[in-house]
Amino acid sequence: MPKNIKNIPRNYDNLGKFLKKGKVLVIYGPRRVGKTTLVKGFLKSFNGSYRIDSGEDINLENIISSRDFTRITRYAADNDLIFIDEAQYIKGIGLGLKIIVDQMEDIIVIATGSSSFDLATQVGEPLTGRKTTLTLYPIAQKELLTQYNKFDLKKKLPEFLVFGSYPEIVIKERKDDKIALLSEIVGSYLLKDILALENIKSSDFLMSLLKLLAFQVGSEVSVSELAVQLKANVKTIDRYLGLLEKTFVITKLGGYSGNLRKEVVKKYKYYFWDNGIRNAIISQFNNLEDRNDIGQLWENFIMIERLKKMSYDNIYGNRYFWRTYDRKEIDLIEERDGKLFGYEIKWGTKKVKNPDEFIKTYKNAIFKVINQDNYLDFIS
Image (tube, rainbow, N blue to C red):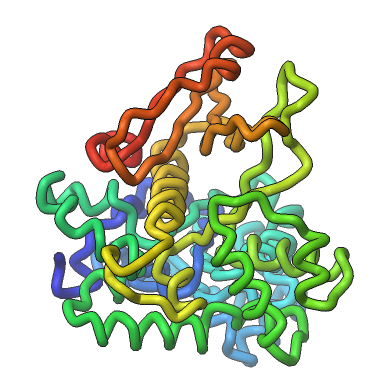
């Protein structure tokens, strides 16, 4: 693996093709996945003047949120490009950026945010027609295959399943170093945006919720059961699940229903955007041979890597799981171009019986098993 974070190839390394004068490039993604490194790496070869600032700077917030055209344009003057990191901390960031690009038609603006729910709310309407949006995730297998062949990457699979794919984790060689860094990310950064932007004083409740979700990866989650276990009401649980989604901690998968009344549709499955984060939350870093959750790790890994591929390759479609009340199920259904694609995700290579009822009901559907032999073709 690369010895330096900056040497890890990213899908958006050619950032220049996404930049336009008089436009804002918004880059979302979890904390510590390399958004700042990506932009600063591009700026090294940028042929023009630029300035770099952080949304955590109160002086910058005062300027951008002031709605004072003179102050804002004076701040941006004499620069070809403005880069504002952690932009979600600036109230009214969208309107402030709109003023910059409206008043200075030749300027380029880049804003990064680790919290999509706040940044999206503030930039969406003000910047309609004035922005391009990218999302950067933890390192994708697809990205690593630009440097490593499939054989070498497969040998590293146990590390990805246990420790995940955050850039700083990928380059660490010692297990103790990986554990220490993951523990730091979970303890200091994972919930920072929710705590700061939602005025939540304690992370204990959120961590308790995440622990319950970590043990239910790949299973349907009952919000009412979570509420009982955490001694909270259903609305509170729903709110926190939404916040955890919007801050790139978890993502949900709903049930597919087409022609059968007995298909389950009202529950969701939740997956973590990174296996290492999931394992750090429950403090389990055992080797694969010493674990009883290898199926969950494998399913979470494949689900997320597939999401990364679809995002980076601009593959558009809806995603679901499929299950009937009599327990017939398929892990992943993709609905693309009017067709259904069913995927069963299995750690072993044992032959899987075809889902006859699904194939009979949806005659044009395609079904495939994703296992250790063919997974890289599916996610890269």
